[in-house]
Length: 112
Image (cartoon, rainbow, N blue to C red):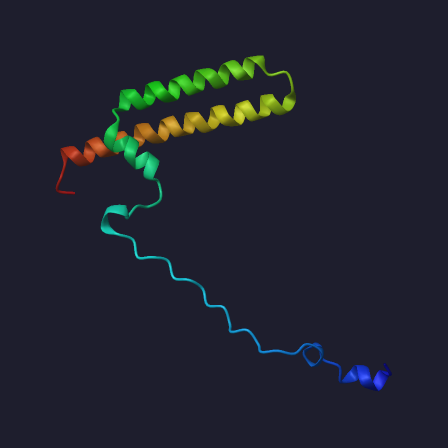
C-alpha cells in the first residue's frame, strides 16, 4: 500500500457485516422488604439469634486458636498473618459488644 492509501484506510472498510447493537446494563432486581439489609446479613443474624455470651464464647475460641497458631508460627509471614488475624478478631469482638449494647439500649427505650 502506498502512503496515500494508508491515509484513508479504516478498519471498518476491511470488515463487513452489520454493527452490533450497544450493550445496555442490566437493572438490579428490586429488593423485597424481607431481604432489605445494609449488607451485613451474618452480623444481623447473630444479633437476632445469639446472645452476647454465645458470640463472645465463639470469638474467644477463635482468638485462642489464633494465639496458638501465632505461638507455633515459624516464619515471619505466618507471624504477621496471625497478628493481623488476632487484631481483626479483637475488633470484631469489640464491634459485637457495641452492637449488643446498642440493641439493649434500643430495647429499653423503644421511643427513640
